Length: 378
Image (spheres, rainbow, N blue to C red):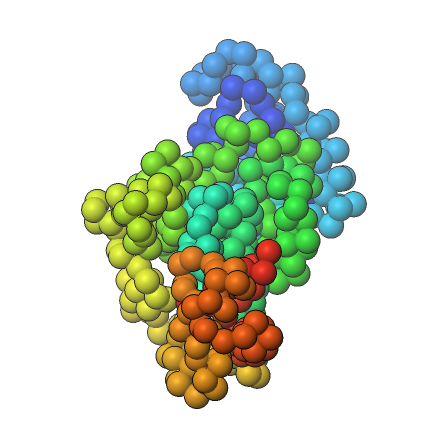
């Protein structure tokens, strides 16, 4: 598509009061955004758009801003995909309100690959974080692209897990493509771009306003064959994503949680409503169509010294030294323990416990959290 065609798509998106569905209705009526901008005022008013919208388009509103957007994208190394672009994700075209324009940074071809979304609370438990990372890792290792929203908590864990596989991941922003939110995820964003893509339907420079995030959730689910909810409180935005997934005829998966934990309300509620109870990667893949399952490759080999699967980790654990076993048995997967508590439970001296912790961490069986807290890897 020519830059001229892209400019008019960008311009229509900027017309206040038109909206996503209005853009598609107008393009369908006139055949292209350019044709809509060339139409007379009478023709514009006759196709059902509000009079003020017709007048704005007739006055060429948004065209200059769109030209500046395209120039800024070129300077920043961004790509602009329109609904008519060859690389526009085919699965996303199937939803009722696909974004007319996507601003992209990274490899746009990953947007058309088989993908699964992993979403959840911004305030996860240690258990939720581990589950998200493990599921993302295992799914990405089987050539699925992991889609999430770059938010704190479960989203960040999903991106990190996919990158560690190593695999592909896509971040869908609730801000302009040039506005990373939260700021502490700037390094993570760079890694995502290097191994996948970062996208947004919002114009460049758009701030991360709260109302943007529910809007972008339809893209997260729309890009994906299914959505996995790991942890989500009663009014979490992740439940909006799950609802949208169901409306888009996508699969909905949920990881069960402790019934006394607020973050478990969402997934447990979804399971009651018929979502697939999920505790491992196979629960996700087995729900996909046969032709998709056949295309998914075996897991990538893990790095040397690290168990590739939970089964391998269990076998590895059986060969531990007495100190390592005592420390490993003292740890839990759902609650981090401080060094002193581990020493007390393992009933060995602190130097021996610290040595065992280091060995277990290097072996990939446990992980260290801030403050000298340790937890089993799932």
